[in-house]
Amino acid sequence: MIVRFIARDGTASSIAANPGDRLLDAAQADNQPLEGTCEGQLACATCHVIVEPADFARLPPATEEEEDMLDLAPNATRTSRLACQIRLTEALDGLTVRIPK
Image 1 (tube, one colour):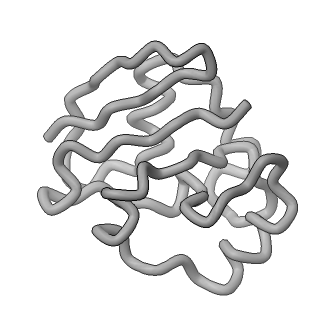
Image 2: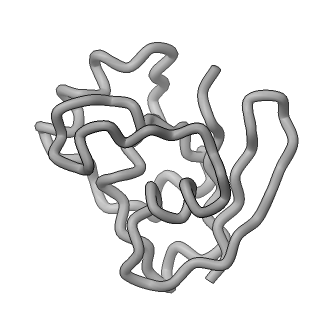
């Protein structure tokens, strides 16, 4: 499956990922600037991404804990998510996310 990242400067890159991978791991494999400081424990928002609106509906809803962390993320939008909380599936093939400024 393919995941597409749009960097802060607007350049795009695509990476092949495996179903079951976390979006954070795919991003880090593509050298995207996502820290994931808490290693997916919902204790930070350093893996905040903005999902393209057309793809947002394909994601399972965020948990209340994820929503709480997103409240702390700078530049959060309606389609913001934490990359550590998104497990990639075949249904998400072609997912496009932006790295926030």
